[in-house]
Image: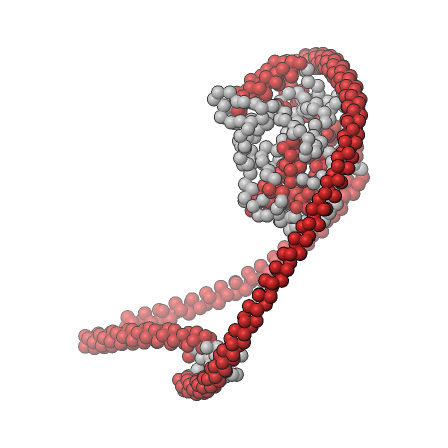
Length: 632
């Protein structure tokens, strides 16, 4: 029996890593007959929110966690949404999905780093239309509609309305991106389940496996309830429940593991034979031989070239061997001559005679030479030590000079004397190079040149300071003149204030005149008030007429409401008839499934009997063959 391996479409991290196959799909059927995925259509903002599928489930005593479907506790998102690498991976996944599904706009990984709210709404509408083609993004209150849609789809985490105002912000985009990736996984699951839709499938296909109906559903629901209770109590693995569920399934379907193994082996052998025969029937033997001939010819050419290379290599080795033999003969002759020279010198040594005085003189000269060597070695060590000390002193002097040179360059840069194009350099080079580039005389010359330039610069600065001092004195004189002007203006200001006082008095007189005019206007207002009252009486009469018209409209509204209620009852009756038809259809489908299961059992029994007959024939043939062998 084939079992479909469940593929993990979502990239969310698993709470418990496990390589075992879920026991939900351990039955003889590899596809769930779920029909189409129930996708909720978007509701208006003012419509009533949809409740959870499981209702408000309250966990019992000892349960350590709330249900993700009906609990009130907010779940913490286990995904590393603040990890930049994970965010980049989600962005690439979103970009690949949009390009794969044919997103109409131009979208890249760079533009998805911080998208605008308008771009996010386009992406969300495009992805949700894959679930509901009739969906259209509303034009108002989008910040409430998007979290509501995600909540209706079962998104387990909270997405705030404030995040919709600034989608591309660094603190908001990771959470919004996580919800979009979850929606992509939902679309993938929906597409997968649409491909596996079995509601109106052809059950006559032999590759489709059928569940056992009520008994299997009872086992499956018991297993689901037991594991869910354990999950709500804090468990993450269900090995015992899986083993028990698998054993019950084997007892339900009367599974013979030995027979299954033999049938699988037989199927493997037959499928290998069929594959081999298909390959032989599809390939042209003449073409195969021709290709083999071409391959052999190429191999022959390679062998011939390799043989020629070996022959050339052999010739080179023979030439080297002859050269080495000649060198060996020359070395032998040289050894013979050295042996003759050694015998001659040995003969001279054995024949010559030395007196004791000669030996003592030789020893004394040897001691003198040894003393001379010792004294020279000591003087050499002293000279090397002196040279080492001088080198250390020279290095220290160099370091001191480099420090002073760096300070000089730092000060020159502050004074804008370096480089030549500096502001105060005036085209002169004040930079001092390292002492390794010049000799002592050149250093003195460079020093005198820089000192002359600096003296000239100092004189220029002094002249500039004197000029600025003169300018300061002139500015002070101008300030005194401005102060005198200010005093004159102050006198003018006093005169203007006196004029303003006179104008205020004139203004007060004008205000008194205006008060008299206001009294006149008040009398005119009283006459206008009487006219207004007359108009109010006429408006009251018009209001009474409007009230009578409103009553007539309310009566008409009640009539329309009665008609609407009647139509609603008609729709409810129609829905009841539709549900009854659907229930009848489900009963017919279940009966058809039972018939198909019985037919499969009958076919299986017939195949089993045929296999037993074949095995019995094989046994008879083997017995006859053994009898013939024994008789021979």
